[in-house]
Length: 116
Image 1 (cartoon, one colour):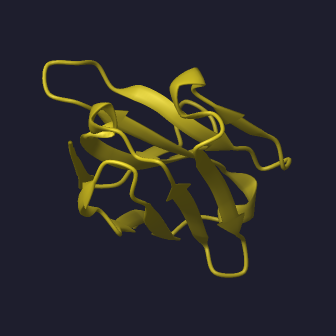
Image 2 (tube, rainbow, N blue to C red):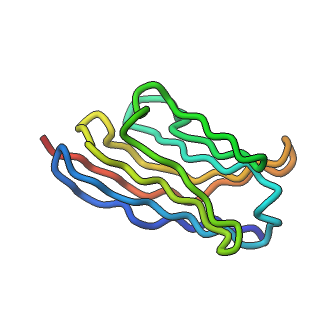
Image 3 (cartoon, helix red, strand yellow):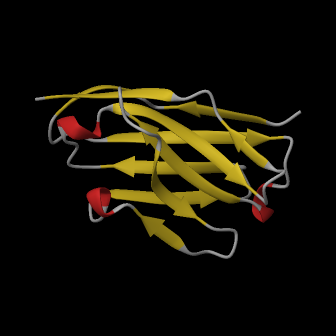
């Protein structure tokens, strides 16, 4: 059974930092592209950051220079370091593991709220 368990969300003031973690089980973690997505109320889910199995990273323009994605294949964990947080970063953040259309898994989400 595949599980992705996120942690690290919470309430923070604008300008603050948070680090999200996602621990995966039931998959060969190193083979999967790992991503962080977010969904704000009334908006579509959007890609925040991606760390491919090949070692490439990709970021949404809105978070470049502020967020950093990393992964530890030995711990089956992907992280999202979020600095200089803004109120518009408020959303539910989801961890995603992708290895093709039939192996596309999501975590339950963790709430991040940034107060102004």
